[in-house]
Length: 197
Image (cartoon, rainbow, N blue to C red):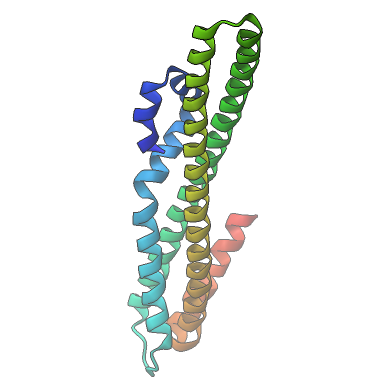
């Protein structure tokens, strides 16, 4: 979306459309573009680490290391869910901009019909140029929306896999780390019940 901004500056209508979204939506777009790749890589890396440790067949697991891995995985997933919220807000803002572009296009088409009826050649040429810019901007918005939705969906799938593996890790700690693991597991479940109550 950020790459579209120079185009917006060139097109006064585009600037108006971009400014029609809320500051929260603009901030969500900036956050999504700034953090999405980094968080996705972190989620993927953590997922692979959990997978590697779960698959290891060792009779003795390092309790503290596994608990720290579980904790950091939960923190990574929480950060990823915040970023997914930003992506949803950003996608909503793109939809708002698309709707505004559509309204502007319809208005220009009405103006064009009127100018044709008046046989005002200068207005016809000007409106056709504006329509070309609007259509180019609209295509760019649709492309950005599709790209961002695919990235969001991919991150969501990665986070789901991370959560599944974090759950498996939790069970491994409970089952393979003796009394410490069982106590940790019971305390964790108790805290979860208290938070949800």
